[in-house]
Image 1 (cartoon, one colour):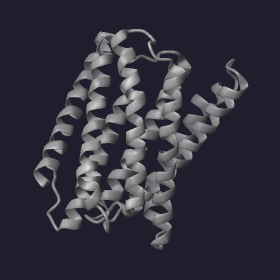
Image 2 (cartoon, rainbow, N blue to C red):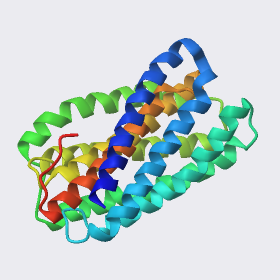
Image 3 (cartoon, rainbow, N blue to C red):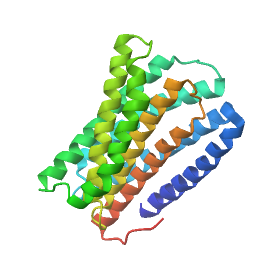
Length: 263
């Protein structure tokens, strides 16, 4: 079982490295690599689901509660559907499947992601933890700058755009929720991510940061009208999947009394 997990983790690292190269190449090839990039993302998701299938029964009693792992598994399983749809569209080079339908499934993924953030924070408070002065001093300046830039570059243009009012309001609310969650997760990662025992928290927190950053960047790219199937911002999602694999592997090793890996 341990060997199978290491094979999955090593395969995920190889796929992540390959997609990094492909995204760099896509700056010159445009959307030609869209299908390949979506296939690589789908492979990463399936590797993550394989890792969870192997380790999930053995993660109880670790740093991250089983309830949180269950919600993560639900989010990843649902995420398979829109990624498969986008892969089909990318290879067909046309909208075989409605982008609106794909968007609905991404919204369904968004719900368990927010639940994961809430469970992380509730567990954080339940353990009697609070944000340290060091964490606040380290994170708040950069987060404050990020919030200001997001409002100026994204929220204000959205508010004054010519898109329908309902879509405009929902997009702005979604962005504000993402920014607030990003700030919360970043502070938790700095506070509780230190030491070996805190590594599962750190990996999951960083994965959430990647997901939220990708959502915010994609919203800006869509706003300025340069969205493509080979969008480099999507690489952050691939990083998030790999970090979740590392989180599961790290928690299993802590429970089993195995030394942590650096790979």
